[in-house]
Image 1 (spheres, rainbow, N blue to C red):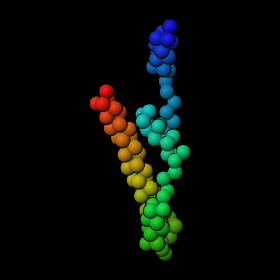
Image 2 (cartoon, rainbow, N blue to C red; image 1 turned 60 degrees about the vertical axis):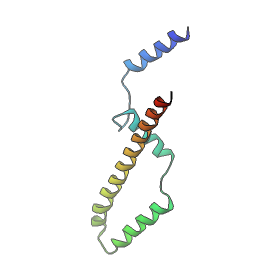
Image 3 (cartoon, rainbow, N blue to C red; image 1 turned 45 degrees about the horizontal axis):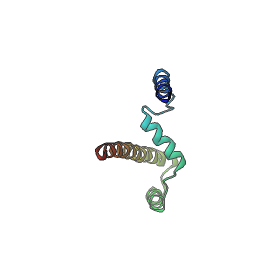
Image 4 (cartoon, rainbow, N blue to C red; image 1 turned 90 degrees about the horizontal axis):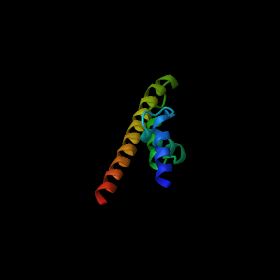
Length: 98
């Protein structure tokens, strides 16, 4: 009875399109959810951004934005890649242990 139910759920899950938001994969969607619920701005990161702003002191705001936006995108891309690859490694390790 339960096997029939599980098979029906699998069929339903595979037949419907997924709404992944801005993500391309389920792992990226998982990262987005994690990131929204676990802010990563620790004191070291805050200090690093303060130093970056200090270095840009006197620059017009538009010029600062030209630096800050790519820096933030680069940081986010690296964080997302690390998160996704970490999940993949965890899954592979779990499979190797079984």
